[in-house]
Image (cartoon, rainbow, N blue to C red; front, side, top):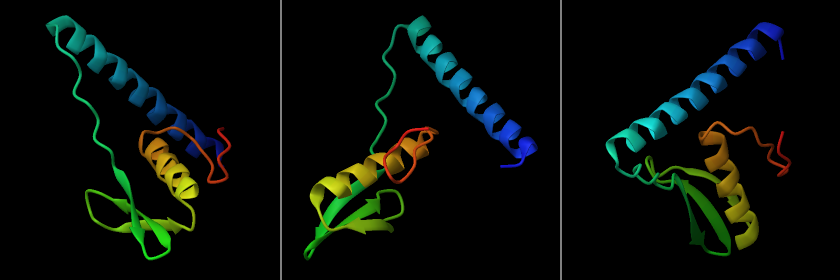
Length: 93
């Protein structure tokens, strides 16, 4: 990746972390619990395959032939949506 792009990606990741910390501090100050994050991706059985569906749009993001693979893929998509770098092979960077 080009160094300028990598610098931008790192900067955005740092801002995301800071916003998460600030939000947690705010809720601690007012004495309330943070709202629970909703699940973005859901696994649905379609015939002999498992479809991973984005709940907000209803679009199928992929499919897998076993339940375990489908759940792992959905968790990887969730992690990517949260800004965590993961590869599709399951290795964390």
